[in-house]
Length: 220
Image (cartoon, rainbow, N blue to C red):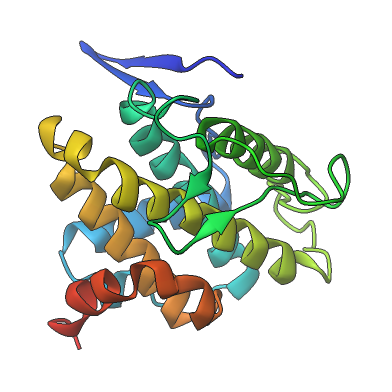
């Protein structure tokens, strides 16, 4: 199992499950990230997820995918003490939904494993995709591969499962830590983003359907 990493900013120390993925300062993607953060600050999430005028869709999806990885990384990092082999022997999202891990490369046949093991596999796999310069180019002018959008969709589909597990199995712990507003805002942003660009099949979202309706209805 990977250890949690502690990242320090000023006096605050925040635990992340994997090292944070940084977008290089001065790059166009960094400017896009700053734009996203500024529009998020306005409080209108529907507007914040829209493709900025004149920007490339692949680049916008790439920047936001990195950002969601970092957010989920931090959110899961806060509850790793509660998500153990004993408490979560299977990776589930409530009693009806169980996830088995396969990445098509190292593990071709889906395996049943504990939630912490599954999430470790998942976050390591996502990290490997984000670090692949041919898939997520950070330099200006380097084109995205043809299969970029399908890889991004798989990443987001898998990141959703971490949200689903946290909500179903660890929401009490999230409330104890007073992180529920942070979790809800992050998830709402994630859902608005994937809805805006049709990035996750509806059937994949079923484990949190009620919550999605509750969080998104008043913003229609």
